[in-house]
Amino acid sequence: MKALIAANLKMNLNSRQTIALVKNYIKLIRKPKNDVVVCASFTAIPEISKSVKKSKLVLGAQDIFYEQKGAYTGEISALMLKEYGCKYAIIGHSERRQYLKETDELVNLKLKGALRVGMTPILCIGEDAYFRDSGESFAFVEKQLKACITGIDKKQIIKVAIAYEPIWAISTTKDRRDITTRDITQMHNFIRKLLKDAYDLRTASKVRILYGGSVNEQNISEILKAENVNGMLVGAASLDARKFAKVVKAFEQ
View (cartoon, helix red, strand yellow):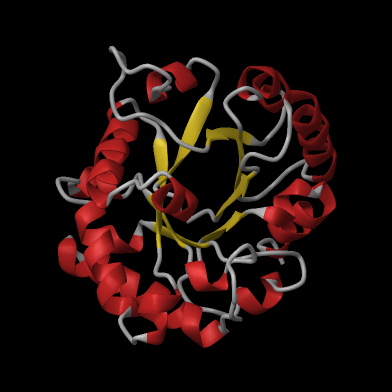
């Protein structure tokens, strides 16, 4: 399967800055062998969709609402984003869970909303330091994943990318800890097993499992030594075109 490398620009750049960054992406990532996605802010999507359309990069959103339309003030649906060529959407990012109190049940609705219109969801799951330190990482991730994929059948799950983001290893987290290749391997293998148990081996093998914990050009080689890593969800490093390009090219070596 092709790897998936997604840039999550978060709430960092205005439209002009995003356009400039994406133009640099295009210069440095001309013919990627894998799927490269730019998840920009909503306000920048209409403008950068024009640039991305002429390149090998793909456009994504940082979030969606679960309904296609209706009386939901301030929300943006997957259907609206598809109008601008968005093919991917990050669902259930840890920051939305933390700051906006998104629940697994809401994430499940958003997952279904994306799939309903043919958009590929990047489903984020992962534990914080409390569950890590208490030895409950695997139990937490199992409960979270099962809740998020409730009602998703075999044909749908293979269209979902799952991003494991250990909150305790993210650069913006207080008292951040380093994660090891062994840690990543154990959790990614565990996620694959959960998918096999929920569906079957053939189905589970088609789901891309991404890693998303402070990925950058310096640690990418070490991360890629881990098993069952089918891509990356890149945060801070994606704000620098050269750093992001190095992460993308690391998958091609």
